[in-house]
Length: 295
Image (tube, rainbow, N blue to C red; front, side, top):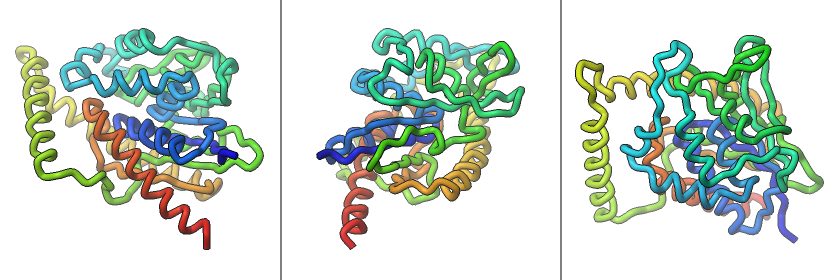
């Protein structure tokens, strides 16, 4: 019989793409994922899995280069956020259909925060799209979602590892995947040649991207992205501290730690590499777990 797993996926910007590799490896190792809870990017990947559309999401993410990432960015000059996010969601609707959470094959929960009423908001019913969109509203980057009584932002602000919202079943294993971990980077070994080629491809992409996105008389996009990364680092540090306290209160059976140094928060064009890292770290972690288990 397959080992059941209740899976909790943290937020972490582009690093959250690694969750795809983690899930693929867990399934390959014979785990049956019986429920999922996620914040921000964890909510998105978890939703794709629960909808049976992870392959489609993976394919799309792997097709993104820097240029495509930026073409999906709908800049807004509102003081509440820098990106509206409509373009990305419109694009996603082409390969992921909206569905009510209660109609999914497995229990699912996404977490956002109502910044006006200073409380956590958990989505475990209603439109899965609404749930994802609210959960990914990174403060000052993606515009928040207005509700009748409040304003919803990224759940990471209060609960980046929503371990207290995942549905448990008998004999399941509670697995947490943290893509913001303070651990050394663990990557699958690559040959020198492969590294060289990858570097050249990245440099070309970055150049094309910056050239395309350089309107007259405007601060360079590099500075803008630098600013968002700095902001994200600051928010990331706080979220991580809060998340660690949550884990102490609700210890999981197994934690898969992925280093927050694997990439910057907006490096969505590195999807293939990030998925591989997720897979590799999970393999290594399961080997250790197997050893621990037999002692």
